[in-house]
Image (cartoon, rainbow, N blue to C red; front, side, top):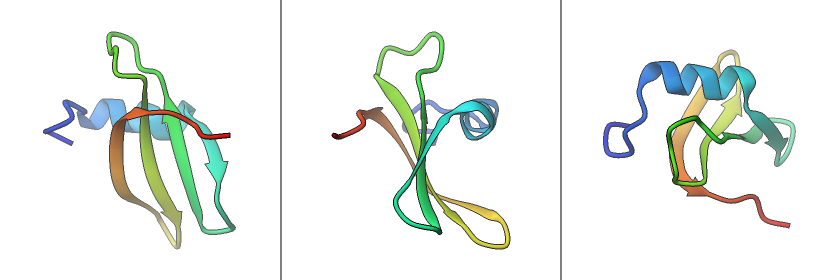
Length: 65
């Protein structure tokens, strides 16, 4: 996250208020345009287990289809 200039508060905001799209019953992406950033959407690839597991965080993200 440091390389992408995303701090813990941004990640929390993304996970709480972002747009979620599910790949299947366990895997999804959560994306949001954050104020002050001009690199499209910030996106977290997540897995729903006993806890929410953030696999990776991306920037310059665009929804497909």
